[in-house]
Image (cartoon, rainbow, N blue to C red; front, side, top):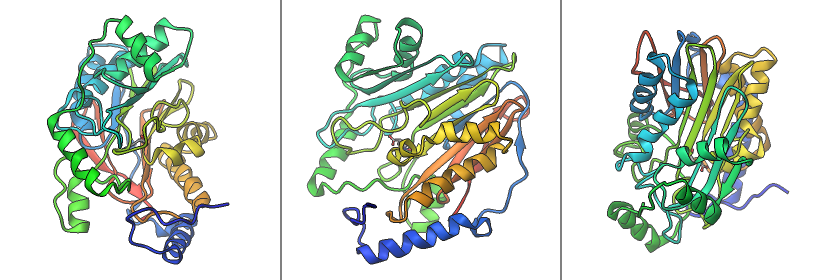
Length: 353
Ligand code: SD4
C-alpha cells in the first residue's frame, strides 16, 4: 500500500499530494518536461574529482592536492571528504552536524576503492571523521559496515579522538526545532536558487533549511576510480535512523570497469531503489552518466506517486572516460568538478522540475 499520509507540516491534504505526485510522475515519464536544457556532456581530463553541492569545491581542492601529485583516488576521496566533516559552518556533515530528535549527532559514511573493497559506519557518535573510520573498517576488519556503539568502540581502538560534536549553534537549532517538533526533511537546494524560488536567504549550504551530504568520486592518473560519502543524515531524524550514505549500492557505488555514482537527498528513497548501484549498472549497459542518473531518478518517481513537494533526490556519476552527469528530482542540486583544466567549476544539475 502506498503511504498517502501527508507529511507533517506539509500544509497539503491527501488529495493535493496525490495530484502533485501524479503530475510529477507524468513529468518524469516525459523527458520533454525537464526544465533545464540538455547540457553538453561534461568530460573531464584524467585525473579528476567531482562532488555534490557547492561546498564540494573546497573538498575537491583537498582531493586535487592528492590527485595532481600522482596520488591514488582512494586517498583523494578520503582527504576531500574530511574537509566538510571538519567545517563548523556545515551542519550536515561531521562536526557541528545537526543532531537527531533526541539531541545526538550521529554520522554515516562509506568509502569504496577500485578493487571493490568497501567500508562503512552508521550511527557513529563522537568521532569527527567517520570517512576515515569507514576506511579503517575497509582495510583493517573482515567486515563492511559497523554501526552505533560497535563503530565507536572500533574508532576509539583505532586511536580516533572522542569529541563532543554538538556545537552550541547546532544545539540552539535543535532546541528551536524542539518547540514544534515538526519533522519535515526539506529539499536540498543551493542558496541562490532556493533563495530566488522562495524569496528568502537560507544562508550557506548546510544552513538551517538546507541539508546537504557530500558524495565524492575520483579518477586517478592510473585510471582507477574510488568514491566516498559522508553525512550527519537528516536533521531531527529518529534516533537510530540510517540513511543511504553508508549503504553500499545506495549512497555510493564504484565499479572500476564502468564508473561510479553517489547520491544526495532523502536517503530512504535511494535505499529503496538501490540508487547508486542502479546508476552504475545503467552506465554498464551503455548509458551516459547523465542518462543513467536521470533514469535512476525516474525509477524513484515512478514508485513514489505521493510525496511532499519539497522531496528531493539527486544523483551524480562519473565514468571511466571522465564523463560526468547528474540528475535530480527538482532544481537546486549543484555539483563541483575539478580536473587539470579547472579546479572550481560548479554546475547546476538538470532536474524534472
Ligand atoms: C540521508 N542522503 O541521510 C542523506 C541526506 C542528504 O543532503 O543527502 N542530505 O538520507
